[in-house]
Amino acid sequence: MGYVHNVPVPLDSHTWSIAELAAEYDVTLRTIRFYEDRGLLTPERRGTVRVYHPRDRVRLGLILRGKRLGFSLDEIATIVDMYDAEPGEEGQLVYLLDQITTRRAELEQRRQDIDETLEELAEVERRCEADLNTLRTR
Image: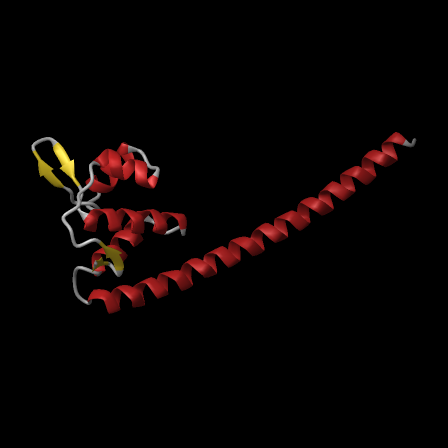
């Protein structure tokens, strides 16, 4: 077993087609081609066929996880590309921790905003119901 981006991958030379990756991750072929166009995935070309290696498979998983966590593609690209360049894995982890802190603060603020909006809606709803009740009892 080897590791790519701290994720275990088989040491054999297993490869995947675009259709296999799309099925495994439940994404469209267009999505994978989009990530390839953005330089996030770099499959080997064998004629007109894309051949994805373990590194691409792991990167796709990281991209999709980053999207679920609310990171932009530029942020995801920075994080996954740092592994392959200086400052390497340590720099990648420090950057990721900073991004997590920022994202968490944004989500906490959004939660507070939503809670305040729900309270305001409840108050307006109470007033409307009271006004409607007053109109109906006249």
